[in-house]
Image 1 (cartoon, one colour):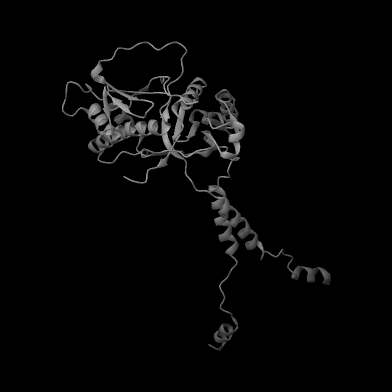
Image 2 (spheres, rainbow over the protein chains, first blue to last red):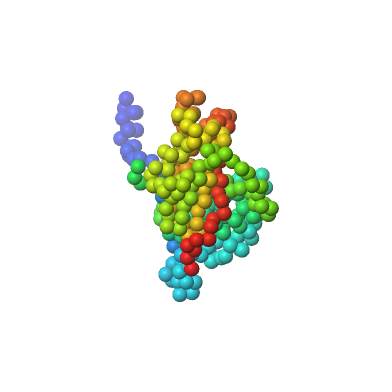
Length: 156
Length: 185
């Protein structure tokens, strides 16, 4: 008995913090994986419309984004207010889309290429003219899987 | 020899006490830069492009559900001005035709929805219309799925189930080339 009590008296009741770095690292890795670093600045104003029948886009690496909207104020002096297309981080016309798709495609492993989806992020106030032109180009370049990006509807 | 033994006793370890701080720093960086916005939208499959003009197919007019959206965002459904709120119900009734009416589709397999818009139609309205038509099909698939398998329809269903349902009620939505009205400059 004496032996035991002596040992107890010495020990300081402290929580071990040795696993703290591990826990923090775990959180860190979680956030590293879910993080999407913004690819370049938005040069067109895009507020996608609302819809209810939404589907999630699964693999981020298989998605390329085409933005369509009016240039933001900063660029209106240069590019006017007509709806424009943004590919990557620059303004583009629909003639640049095939090259853009090709550049994305070569980064994707071959077996997964049929699953590539184009995400059309189109501002709600844009008219269908430019959207139809983009759709035609997509069809001509064989990119048939398209996702009309939308926000979930709040009401209903 | 005595020297080596003393070195052995002294544990040469890097102090890992600051590891947590470094990890914290990185963690906070990623916390700040993270935007957990899942990309969502309506997935569609575009028809492949062909340079030849498509063959003119004569369909029975009872099997075609034509939806026209003009540059003023108004809807003309089978020749009638319609509100978008009624579109889903009308489309559902047209596809399934529960009362076997003469003017609605003969069978869900033969039903075709034809969508046409102007170049001046706003994208918002176009997507709203598309959403309603998709919703009509989704609701019918859901009904069919509950009837056949007793579970609601979802994308996680086994492929065989999904195929069986889509064989019964295939989604046929044909989009015509838009007309050149109301294009803004």
